[in-house]
Image 1 (tube, rainbow, N blue to C red):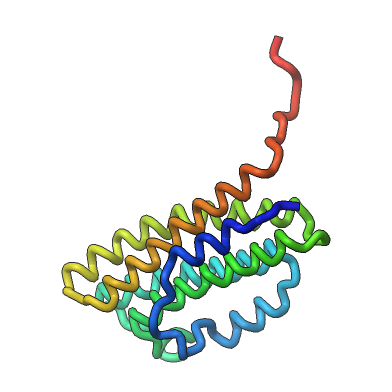
Image 2: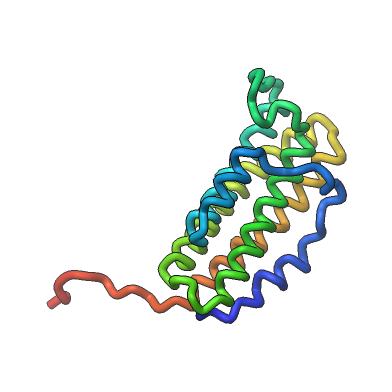
Length: 178
């Protein structure tokens, strides 16, 4: 199994946002996470929640209001950014725990790490857009949270790449070239 201390190191490098008193997941997301016992399924749910928060934050910054009944209706842009950060932090903690357990299926861990790497590549682009919007609107707190989100995104991507590098390369299937 992977000796993964990389996540702990990445967590230390990313400062925790100040506002962590409010629940950052919806009741439905919490239930889905509790039901997802395998690491790849759990990570996927957290990453979907993180992506939704970035999308919703961008919509709010561009003036689009939430629909009545939307589970994120009463969350501010700052709440969304804090939620994104906390989702990624939860992913990293879950991956670290799973990597240290001998019963974790390596293929599931690899799938979760791959999902994290791909998700953070997309998120970095979304965060760049959010950063520009926050600068234009001179939203200092949002801008600061975006920088924290960028830091943890980079750390998570680097951690995922390091974790994936510890898996043997799959040999291409098929005939040998002649």
